[in-house]
Image (cartoon, rainbow, N blue to C red; front, top):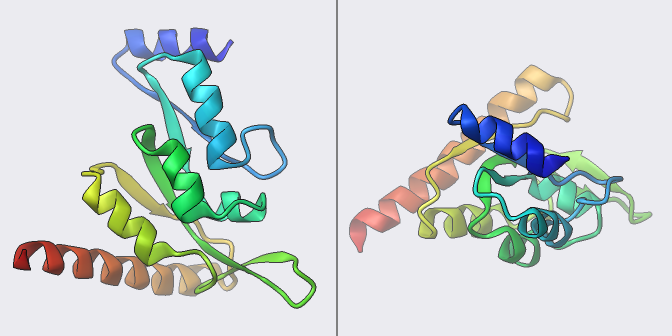
Length: 148
């Protein structure tokens, strides 16, 4: 079924991405990559969400990303941490190694989009803070690249 969908979008010059999502079979980078590779269509890739991988119990970077490397078509930016009871929660700055993830995307030549996913309230204010955080990370990578 997904293969047929990829075939259809491909015919129109588009691509299809499967997002890893906690609570579904492709919840981690490892499982999502397995689905995409099993289908094996060039128009099918991954909408990589490290936050969702974290919620599913995977270490998003470097473990999850290692699995989806080369398949990523889009990235969702949100952070999370585990509270005192071990429950995952979305936060503005958490336990996901976003510096490492952004560095890996940069080093891999990723040229797609990274979108802010707002799960922290108040959403607009949180989105502004998250956007500035992401811009800062990208600025650091760009500055380091221009030095070398």
